[in-house]
Image 1 (spheres, one colour):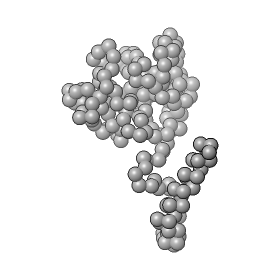
Image 2 (cartoon, one colour):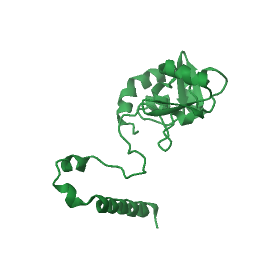
Image 3 (tube, helix red, strand yellow):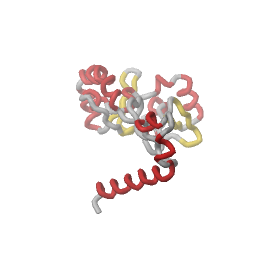
Length: 181
């Protein structure tokens, strides 16, 4: 069975299950029926549905910002460190992990200093008008800002072409409006 056919059957089964559990007749006459008809309701135990306007790249399955890499560690050593589950902080619906308690506290005191520019999306993609996920191991600190890139090639291009930063900054608000979270 093709993947698309299988996915359609799964979605149909989920819809039928939802109808069976909620019953269409019991909701048809309720005042909130019209409002809920346009608002998707996730089934229990499923992750939240994507919405528009995410401001930070995160893993949709775990909720971890920048794939669980400690954002403070970029400024402390030659390479970033993986965050640890015991040092987590939820800030603006995103789960940030840190390598140490000191890094967590530094971030909590000044998150804007440590958050990556363009929500962690690749600035070369943003310069082209699209949100492109980045690889946290491909980074550059320029001035006081942390930039994450999809690839080493994108990083090199961004460093060679200073006009890309201005282009990315001018297009960021438009890109931000269409990013799913």
